[in-house]
Amino acid sequence: MKTIYLVRHAKSGWDSANTSDFDRPLSDRGRKSAPRMAELLKGMGVLPEMIISSPAKRAITTAEIFSRALDYPEESILSLLEVYHGGTDDLLAVVRKIPAGCATAMLFGHNPTITDFAGLLAGKMMATMDPCGIARIDMDIDSWEDAGSAKGRLVWHDSPKES
Image (tube, rainbow, N blue to C red; front, side):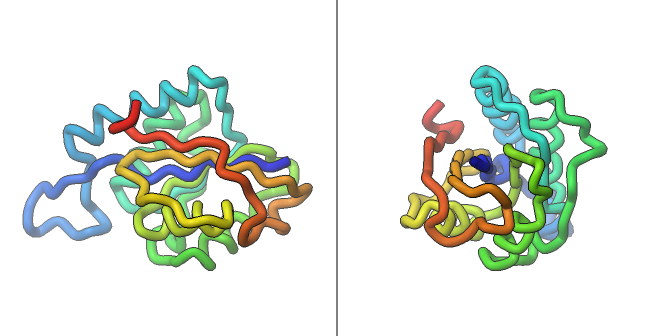
């Protein structure tokens, strides 16, 4: 059994008109919702063995907030550009490279790709994930290499609007 938590980055804002999409920071709302959602997972006993994130400022900042709450070393977050630029096929390629010994992973990305990827793994369309929304997907597989379309089951999802 493999479990992946797919997390859309928390709400972002624009510091100025000169800020690039890649460098957009979290908004005040995002800085409040990310710790709250991370604490929700902590309360459920979630302990990721691997955290992967887009390197975009809003995503990596969200991943760092979660890592602190979940006692995961920030310096161990794997930051991959393909999570920022890529589509569902790219995310699937990233997931398939997770070491076999890892049972629980967490992936921080962007919409619409993160929502589409959750739908791909679960084998059904999902409503758009809100900022800092989380989807837990369990896959009855022995190796991450076997992850694929409809290989998983959506166990639950939540967002700051619902919590």
